[in-house]
Length: 473
View 1 (cartoon, rainbow, N blue to C red):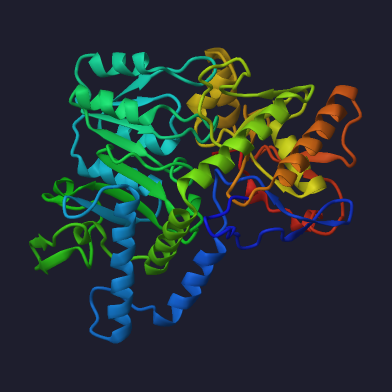
View 2 (view 1 turned 45 degrees about the vertical axis):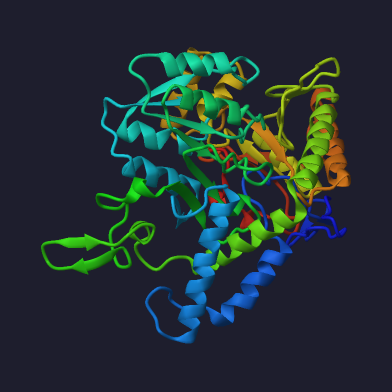
């Protein structure tokens, strides 16, 4: 676990919570699903608890609590701008629910036509693919078999006619953990006169956000502030004219039955009562990461990335997807502390279920809301994809392609990574030897998930939640 200059470690709410396993024992929960969502930092939860007695509606009340809450909300907005290196008054931070909403918000506000081209890549999260398809024509940068692409491939997309109106690109893959040379890519796009929208959801907890991006979106729930706030940072003039993405109270100066006068940004973009508690949490999380420092955060992540990926790659029957660092590489790929893998002969959903039910280890499995990318990492051809699509269209998710992803947080320890490696080695050995599982596991056709057939506490049929599938995303 990294420490700040004073030797203080960051801790997470719920860290080490005992969870039931099918052998009747309770084990400390090993949370290796940080790439999906992070628990709250203890300091963040404390900040929220301190603020709650002062909570009130903001921007509209003369009372002391309203004034105090308004100040806290606006302070969080300023903190988000500083976090992105984009200060007032030229930029604004719109506080919304998450990265997905932020990108949809920007897609609406840029007023593209179907003839406009948005250049993006095949490695993107669905949040940075689907919104652009609604408003413009998408052009893709293809990846290599290892899930990476070079600056030359990006330049080809930038040079193609017609010139893109926007480059929408991730700062870090949520599947492979690959960190593209994003600062260099932004510079290249600008040389071609193309503005850049940076999906920083996966980048923000691990590396500084490059201030050279034109638009930035990120989420509190991946930044140790899971209280429902996301951020869209953009030049103020992006929102200077036209109607906002959401219409309603708080976004207006004057309304009559036939007309409306919208207020100034960013309030114009935040109709309705905002998530003040989420903003306070986000501000606290940013303060904690800043206190810890990027050097300590990066060193912790780099060490765990190597330990995790090299450890998995050394297990017989385990395939790690995406780029790999080799000892002989002069310039190894930059990677986040996560690894996506499969165990030969064992369905990815069964691996995830066994890790949880038998060892108390939480991971993610499926396609990670990045279907096009995972298909490429798995080396699947068009006929295979078509067959799976046909099965899913008939409500059968049992054969959905996918993988298992283990991802580390700031609180992840070497011992927790070792626990995962030992558990995966046991599963792989069971698969290679044909021993099977300690209890039968039943697969649900509608979700694709496996469930242990047992009456153990926490795992009985009555405690099964059919809606818990993570394979669909």
